[in-house]
Length: 80
Image (cartoon, rainbow, N blue to C red; front, side, top):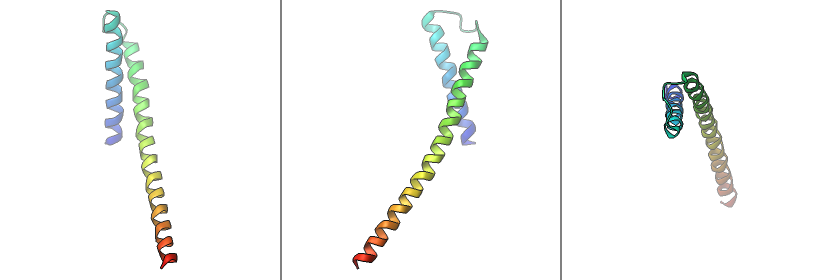
C-alpha cells in the first residue's frame, strides 16, 4: 500500500505543478488534458523510483550497521 500511496502522491504533485505552470501563464487549466496525464505519469514514475530507492537504501543501511556491529564485537573480543 505504501508504494501506491507514494505513486499517487507524486502524481498529484505533478498535477499541481502542471496547474501551477498553466496558472502562471494565465491559460485555461482544462485546455490540454494530455499534458496533465503526461505530467502525472512522469511524476508518478519518479515516485515509483523514489520508493524503490528508499527500500534499497534501507537494506544497505541495515547491512552496514550489521557490519559495524560485527567489527565492534571483534575489536572488543581481541582487546579482552
